[in-house]
Image (tube, rainbow, N blue to C red):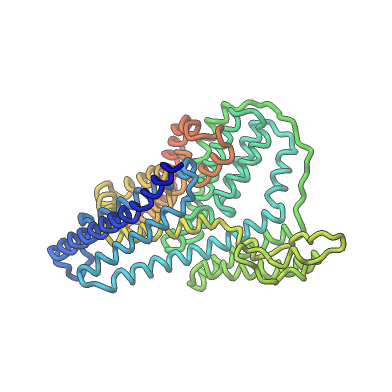
Length: 506
């Protein structure tokens, strides 16, 4: 015991010294970085254009920091570390480095203006997604998705029929409800039907992931990348439908191949039925009205789509108030919420039977249940990529890809990159590069970024989500066995696009 105490005391005495050593090391390293960067800028002459900082110590450190953060994102499932945390940290440090770099050459305005531009871009994306997620949560609370799953499971379809039904529904639901939500919904159906049939569940999950990603590619609402392309004005709303058939081919080719391995066994039908709650259909109608509003704001009023989505949130707010009254819960509707998004007085309200009343429809609860990890992840990604752009990395990548490979080659490569790295930073980087190319090429990169992630299970949010839902069955290795079929669909979709949309390439 005495030895332990003395050892502990000794360790406590050395900690401050070690900490001071680390502080000195970090400060000295930072000084070296600043000095090397300043000298590099001084030699570059700095004129009116942004100097190339890719070879400077600060620029290299920023790139290493981003790669390290993204490695942590890729291994999120293994590390149990939320994907937003490393990119939030990296984004903050990268912009510190950007600011220091520009201050080193006497420029105190460029970094400030650049980060404001990135923040505006993120704000538009954030508000748009927040409203969409709120509507999805509202439909989930009204049992819309549960009722659909219950209906499908109770039909008594064969496994091959379930394979095709879940694929078709994934393809046509994802343009509205986004590919992640669609994959989780259809994946739950496949798991409920499959039972112990692991072979069927694997191909069903792969089929759902490919269908959800393909369906999301021809709609601004189907994926984050398509939303970014639309909000940037590169592709108009109706023009997205030009890649409907290429997207369909992208799903059908691997689906036909995989369906040959699915047996026609008929699993036992489930008798459990779930009905939608009051107002469920009207929430769906309001969501469609919100989409129409956002499109109208963009096309006719020339306002950001996010402002139309926020107006749509107002639709849901008023309907939610009416719904509370209808469900005899008006007294708990507009009480203040605590920091967790819960009504602190809700569980204190007396009821006739001595039990707290069940919570009714609450708009702010739906907002609180949004995927905040995902929303903050987008913030980190946008600011990380924007910061690297200030160092000149995006200009260098644009030169290598779009000049070295040509537009078609570069846009095909974007799809393969999306399978390894998440398609969001890849597409944001392309939009930030803003290469001068035809409308057909912008449609092509929208297609490839949307469907390319299907080639690997980690290449899309839909794949990662289903790996979590069907843990141990639908795995990276199981998906990899069918990557060749998905790659065939990828190549076929590009060929179809180049053929049927040739008019857009002039």
